[in-house]
Image (cartoon, rainbow, N blue to C red; front, side):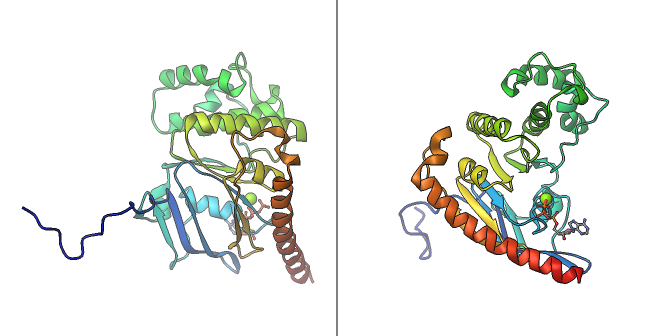
Length: 280
Ligand SMILES: Nc1ncnc2c1ncn2[C@@H]1O[C@H](COP(=O)(O)OP(=O)(O)OP(=O)(O)O)[C@@H](O)[C@H]1O
Ligand SMILES: [Mg+2]
């Protein structure tokens, strides 16, 4: 019979599950500009984490690293599914919706939606059939043959989101997906996204400038410092799900908003002062 070694773990609760992704002390420098400095955060499987921070603090840079498009400076550590890795190894393992919607004007809705699958080498016919099945869920039924210029802003964002969802990866990065929408469309899209997220059980890292949006959507909000970006504050959002529209008037929501706004404003002031000094 095998005897447990002296250093065998004691019986008891299993260690907390490894986060899906973990960044530790990540730096990124572009020539004279330090975009990120000591950025440390984790995202758990199935979590919805929102990121807010002043303009230019390194949010998109962070996403480019996690999407595998940029390598961080030497020294920091990246772990994905419990294994240490280079950013380049994440390329293709994460679905990424960049800050601009990037629909190709010469492709219709379906052909825009299947772009990532096509690049991956999936047969076009199969990808198109799948896209057609998904159209109703994304509020695009009947619009398959339309071109981007024939769609409203909200619809274009849904096509871009559908493309990101169709590229089925555990981790989705959404860089200000609703930034250009009017308030009403934006609120509708937020509720819709939560719905789709819950059905598809993905992990989402979501950048926004809107604190209400960050709280309404997130399990956690990361507030970033002014550049060089690091995590200034990590705020857990223990509000019940499904999140209801009237949540934004609840005292707990307003308390969270006050805390977050204070942190963001402090950093935005720093960022503004730095840019004025640079301009002088
Ligand atoms: N490829 C690059 N080459 C040189 N500098 C870059 C590059 N990418 C980003 N930067 C610089 O890094 C800093 C952070 O930029 P980033 O786009 O990550 O900010 P952000 O937080 O996403 O801003 P915003 O809220 O305006 O989208 C900026 O000073 C930017 O000029
Ligand atoms: Mg950005």
